Image 1 (tube, rainbow, N blue to C red):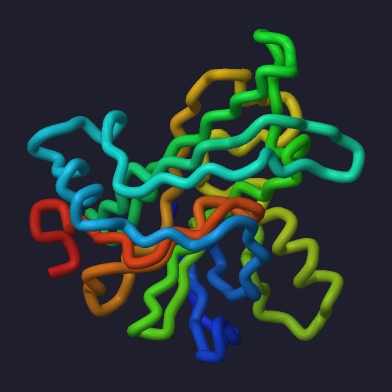
Image 2 (image 1 turned 45 degrees about the horizontal axis):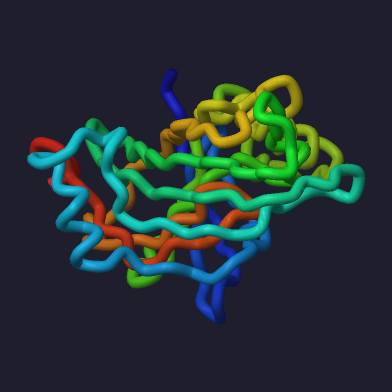
Length: 222
């Protein structure tokens, strides 16, 4: 795949941000978040040192919130969102994180989908200093199509959301198991200017992580 990344402006926290990162490129205003933003602490980042733990064991930062849910669902318990790593290599960024759902009032074999939680699994990485934000590559459509036709733009964005490089992406059939942890990943463009830290919104509807350290693998983006 040869993604064409385009950028356009959006307003975020009173500053103009450029959002890029999909086949066809484009921009979109960020979705809302729930919970309180968490910064990756030096202690947490030290614990996430690749030399002392595998990515699957790393916890750069972690937040717990009441289980989000849509109007037609009544999920209880809480979800734990653990940020694993933000790694840049070969012109791309891989954001790795994990989600655990715990609800003692639900059956042990119960499950909750992205749809059940009213969560959109599109990751957003923001470089506040560089005034730029990035979203996952997609294989079809575009976050913002280069067109003045609002209908075509909306269809392009739907296709992009349905084909973005996020795993797991399936929003209905795939279920997060009760008392189980699922590893999630997203592939985005490499940030311009080699920022040392970025803000990461793992998915729309989940908490924001601020000041997350970026790891440049083998001198990537140098």
